Image 1 (spheres, helix red, strand yellow):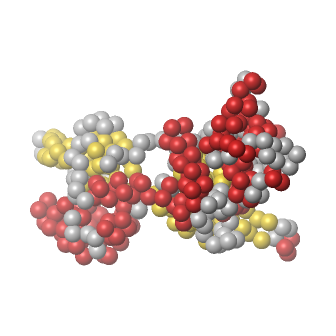
Image 2: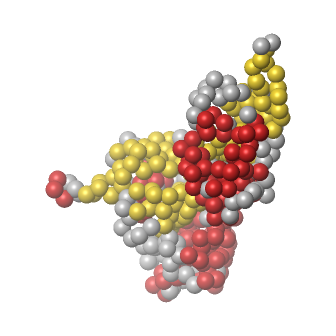
Image 3: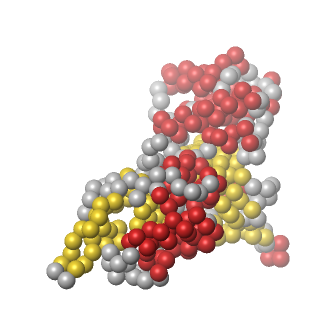
Length: 368
């Protein structure tokens, strides 16, 4: 199982609050939300109705003005954009909302063409591109039909075709499969996965449709205007595979491993770079995912490397367990990827998982 690549940040949200109404009728809808989404990730947002999912989606899509906090798309701050700048930002986005927003007087082909006309594609190719996209959502025989002559599910598929036809950098979808049957929904999900994998498109989906959960890289859950959890599905599987190679985790159940993996963060270091330094306060526990490191200690005659650690090895536990400064320096022998666990989460895991505590105690004794 390969490690997930480092990707550019597509969406970065910090301290985001939002209110509706004024005066006594003013009501807060979002509370201090923070989220980072990378290029090519598919993120599914779940939560009860009224929890703020659609509000967050419309703010990311520059369909509402940011009131408090920050939203950055590919490094561009949305807060403070004027209406013309918001329109320009939306040119990079594809929207799929529950209200199809199709023009009743236009055919399915013409509705999809409207999106193509915003691009530099030669006009002579517009019909061909539109028809190909409609065919990909199962509407090859409905390209000349107007919305009033299409079923609800077919109108939804036209809206999806329009949103996807230009391969936008970001797709924002609110219940995109709610009106679709199993086969049509699976087809749309496959299209989204293809755009993410092959074009680096970032996808955010608000849904209650359990049938499409398996497409997600991450599942973000919102409750009462707060992001209360952010589960990195694919990365968690990778981290669990690494942890299984690590001696101190070998007695843990899959559910316990998953619990710890979801709290770990990926960090990368260049060859020769210090990961921890002797004398510093210990704040993290590390497991090596790839590459190798040197453990360097100070002696009366200078410094020397006393051990080499590689994939599946770990370090940093002594300072955390003894609440003492680091007793050695760890440097990367080559490019290294590690998964780190904060001191707080590390100590919580020690107290919660007896097998983890026992294995660490044995290691601590052997390492002195």
